[in-house]
Length: 438
Image (cartoon, rainbow, N blue to C red; front, top):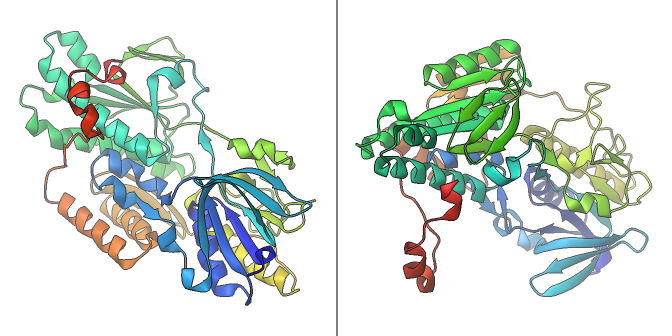
């Protein structure tokens, strides 16, 4: 096959995988989809909080990219990192497991995401745990179990209280969801730690703003705060973290919160690839035209978190970096690429959000759907139904549904998974994790 007919997609997130599937149904004969990603799987980031709370297994929030492509139509997945792009010759250079590879393309789409930014608050990078990847979620869950196990063995009352205090920085979707999941996980696990008292375990949520979930109507932000507080979570509004150290969080007002674990859900920074492309940027995101094409670069497009996309449905606003908009952008771009290949006019991207939702713990949530505001069990069920529908393959949907159903009736799994090789097992068993001592 002529490699110049490749439709290359860089990034395997919601935007990239949705685009690949949509293009497979639209591309004319002689063209194929090539998906490039540093990871071999896509992560359903909105479900990472459920990994922290052991509501699902970590493998349930990821999906193999190869499984999401239709190889019968010639689609190909390449695991690698894009090192350079020659826009004039239309060649992508990538570092792969087999060395450096170069691939010609007919159309090129940037659909990669962002990275966590741990430089917003002094000490955040050294002492806080980010929640961006599935590995982050597993590490946080293990840290929580380590803390509770250590409390059982400590005699100092003040140290026990500090170790049992978990502070979540950020009151957006991720912060609210992980705080709720964490509180429920601790409550469920407590029965297995008879020497730990309930009052020794606390969760605090810090939000540098007047309310939680600023993307939602004020009433739903208030409902989320009320739901979290009924679970014993200390929701602090207008509380800005000024410094983080090994012993806790210093607030801008001067108060110090002694805590054994700080979880960060704020701040993103551009992928390093963005700056190396030499394209026009807007606040670290690639500028695109109304039809999602990149000005000055023939045959190049950008969608998802890496792109600054004007929303024609709401003039003057940019599309937010959410899964719902990433899917909508991918579907619109699939149409535009097919139109470009067939000589037809493209159209501007515009999308009106159908709804927004967040969970606040087990059986609780808040949601706005077509203007209708929901809270409690109905919102929680809606959240789960939506993300279950986004999962690829019937088998994966069924496994998650079974796990969710199981979790409604039985205690959370408190297994502390250590990924240790046989040769290292005896040595590692003698040494405490230095990160767990912070």
